[in-house]
Length: 64
Image (tube, rainbow, N blue to C red; front, side, top):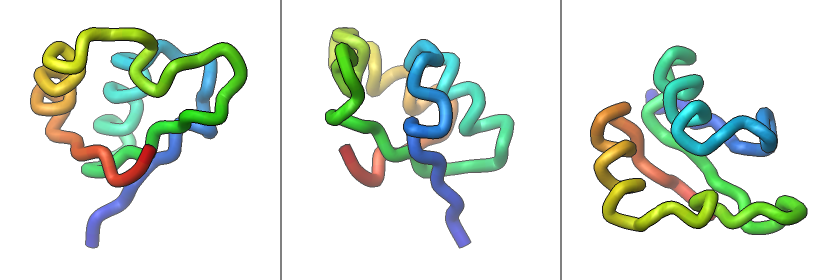
């Protein structure tokens, strides 16, 4: 069974810190939000960099 973590749990946490949190919680899936006030789903980071960080933390994005 795969467990996911939704970013609403820690919306003010920087994106890569959220990735780290998800990994430490044993999650393999994350859900990002596009409805958080003043926040882009990728924190305006470069998409290739985000992909690299997702791979580093062994995470997949289930939903945005």
